[in-house]
Every structure is written in structure tokens, then in C-alpha cells.
Image (cartoon, rainbow, N blue to C red; front, side, top):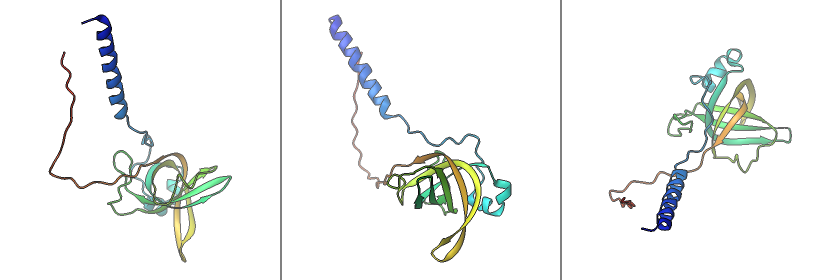
Length: 169
């Protein structure tokens, strides 16, 4: 086999390998390092002073926003997170919390119904309204956010089809 053909074959193999590995790359999630993993929004409501400035990682579904030029507030319906930090909607809700961000958060990006995970510092509580009923919101100053992509679980069928490439050397 000519040297040029071998070099072309090797370059093609390396390119295919790199493209395949690139497809396996993971999207960054908010880091769970140095967070109070056991702390929930209910804990903050029960002990607002003791939990102030605690570093948390909470997530859920965006149910409201208040966007301003100086700061923005997201209202999030909280759910327990899986090990990767994605909200688990099949579990019972932890209630609501507000995530505070300096500056402008685009309401199209943080639209109602989107799943988000927030790493931040507990800022205290704030009384607001849900309809006409008073509600006390735990508040978190955002340090980091992650917006999760939508996906639907498809029902699995009993039939599968596979395709593979073999390489003989």
C-alpha cells in the first residue's frame, strides 16, 4: 500500500474518532462543590437567619420572572435534583423560591416552563403573593445557572436496529 494512502487512511480514522468523541461531550452543569446539599427551601423558611449566606444548588421549573435593567428575579417551582443537578419533576415539589440576578436575564431564555438549576447564596426571605394568598419566598443570589434542554422520553419498543462500523487492521 502506498505511503500516501496509509497517511490518508490514518487521517480519516483520526478525524472520525475525534468527531465521535466530540459527540459524547457533556454540557457543563452548575458545580455542586461546597454546597449545602441537604438544605431545602423549607429549611430556609424554618431557619432564615441560620441559613443566610449558605451556598446551595436548587433547581426546578421557571414559573415567573421580573426583569429589570438593574436586576432580575426568577420565580422557580423547586424540585429535588438528580445526581447531575437536573430537576426531578416526578418527585414532589419543594415549594417556590426566587433567584436574584444582577443585571438583565432574557425572558426568552428563562421562559416559563424551562427547567433550570441555580447555584447561589441564600439571601433571606421575602413575602409575596400567589394570587391573593400571601407566600414567603426563600431568596437566592445567583452565582451560576444551567438551563436544561427539553426532552421527551419515548416509549421503548421491543424492536431495535443497530448500525456499526468495523475496522480491520
